[in-house]
Amino acid sequence: MRKKLIKTLAILLCLLFITILTAIAIGYWYTHPGRGPQLKIDPNEKAYVEEVSGTMVLHLKGSPYEMGYQHGVLAGDQVRASFAHLDKLIEEAKDEVGLSRFAANLLLDTVYAMCSKYIPERYKREMEGIADGAGVPLQLVRRCNVLSVVTERGCSSFAVFGKATGNGKTYHGRNFDWVMEGGLQDTTALILYEPDGGIPFASVAYLGNVGVVSGMNMEGIAIGQIGAVSSDTRLDGLPLMLLLRSILEDAHDLDEATGIIQNARRTVGYNYVIADGDAGEGRAYETSANHCVEFRDNDPKETVEYAIPIEGAVMRSDEAMDQTVRSFQRCANGYPNMPYGSNSYDHRYKGMATRIQENYGKIDENVALEITKAVAMRGSNLHGVVCNCTDREIWIAHAKGTQDAWKQPFIHFDLKELFLPPEQRANK
Image (cartoon, rainbow, N blue to C red; front, side):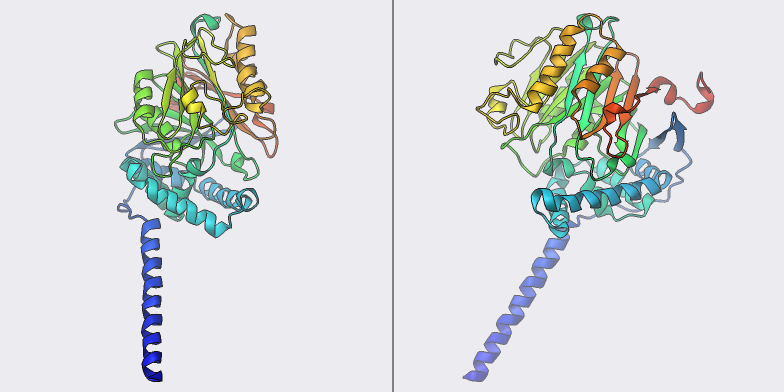
């Protein structure tokens, strides 16, 4: 009897061990999706790096894998430094959200696996190219590109055009306000993409990322997003940074940009402001996982008492004007509370609206820059960007150390010139 019991226990332990090993194997397989082939690429055939006004400008051109490989090789040291900063951010997460480094990495790997079927193959291949070119684990690149699914931060964005400006041009201002403790501001570049079959565009970038957070394409479309914490969320969808990348790469006008936002399987709450320099127009979008509402300037849909509609201008911070989207929001004092008194409303949204009204009819790039600086979050302003969407010009400032971007000089870039080979430029 005793021998039979021992034998039964041994069988049960063996089955338990096999079950645990199977679970580990399945978990590993799930969090390590397959990849495409490695290719032999000459990174210098189509791509190159230059320094413009103290800024690294990285020119990428070709297929998705080619551009990724060029990125990884030509900016390899900075890419590896960027992932070291990501590791530091994950370490910081232990204090902010109580996750160990192992748990945080596992969460990001799981989120990538959940999002994988919604991520276009071209972006997966570009991630693989970066990993191969820089000699870093592919998992690190994937984790970087799903961060926006698990963390949202307060930003601000506006577009002014038509009667609001003094010269008839369209300006787009945007602050990217996020944690500075990770040191991402040390791995910045202006990346100029010329994708096969896509629209050339500029990304105000942190090296190692395929997705974008700020930029403009050569059709005059400029983007800005604002984290708007919502309870209407999902973890399986198209991560924000890749959605924004798709707008820059694929949208020739605002209608196409609108379609991309509306048709994407969105993950968490974000607001957007997008401008179109050729149309002389801007639009705002308020979104959560299952809701998306589009607003134009002076929109009659902005009926809530805290809205400040202006002809020739759109602006957003966290709070939604649409009450369905707002009903899910926990940001800006949270629904059903009014946003008054919150940093989002008083400093950012009202700050933009008031300054646009004060300078109405005479806004140019200098005024747009001053508005952008004034409404940046203090202590967490990673970068500020102003675009002249009409003329394809861009002004960029990055944080330095722990000093906000709004305190730094804004560097001017003429994208029409920069997209030309150096020998063809007027100021060569």
